[in-house]
Length: 229
Ligand code: MN
Image (cartoon, rainbow, N blue to C red; front, top):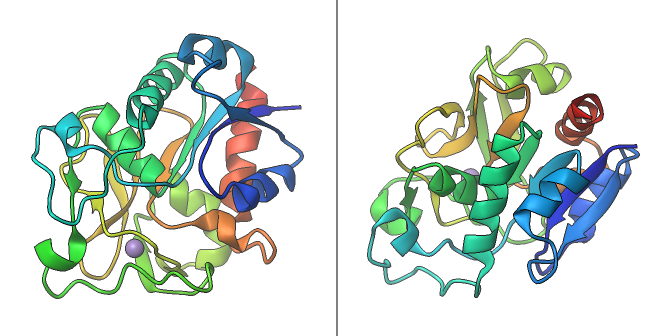
């Protein structure tokens, strides 16, 4: 059975349910105990979860007035973790804050506040219900994301997603490509095309675990993880 390491966050239920449905064993990572080096030896895949804003100092910017204070130690731990996982060739699925952490870890930057910095942007923050559809995403047909969502796309190139973020990927980290965007140009997914499974999405696919719209993302991670070791 594939073991997936999952970063701790305040509401883990939906992440755990989405993974457990695939038959994977979930291992919640404790920064105090689980060193990145030990984690990459112990798990078959990594999932980075949502949470608060990444400290803008980590991509060389002063904080915007809306930027939330960093969660103590979380940025540094997750950056070390995702670097170790990529180095170890582990499959990675990064969600919401996770895609932002991954982009910053490999040298990218973030839009610190979409509403004030991108006038005319669509609404990217609908908090309730958690699976409420906020906007479409346009998906690059040649991407891993499009292959995973093939059934849902039905030959088209867009699908509807939820959205609970005020930040997004800005400059894309070297080696990564953009594979989904919102109608306003906000980056909604990035990938490493030279890896079998290294994908980050800005929306919350885990909130659909009951109805299965995005189960393919978790199944893809776990399948890739099962092959990895
Ligand atoms: Mn969005």
